[in-house]
Length: 146
Image (tube, rainbow, N blue to C red):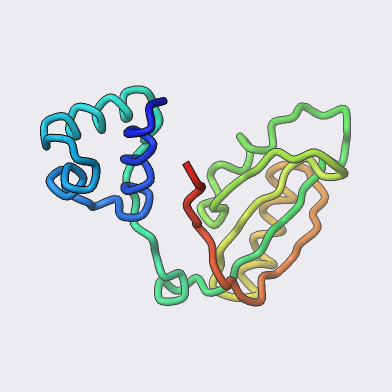
């Protein structure tokens, strides 16, 4: 990947709504050249989409937790992500090395909702869980250095 494409990715990671005109000013390219590069980055999959950063507290989901899961039966198929995809409270599913198979990041409104979600996860995927509740999040979503 060219340095100019990395620069464009960094600028868009900071502000996904940055206009092609502003991207052109920041990179020294023409507007049409920036437009072509952004489209090429999208086609290649380097840009998968543009999203909104929510204030989860204001959205009614103030509680974040990380749930580690491992199959109750180690011989069972490794299909937990597919079995859990319908649960919208799960924001991310990461395959990990170690004792657990996956770590789920979830957002819920209350401890009661977390308890209900844990029951749904256990039932849907036939897994054991270990939960860590987030007390605060000083920062997240940092852009990687490109």
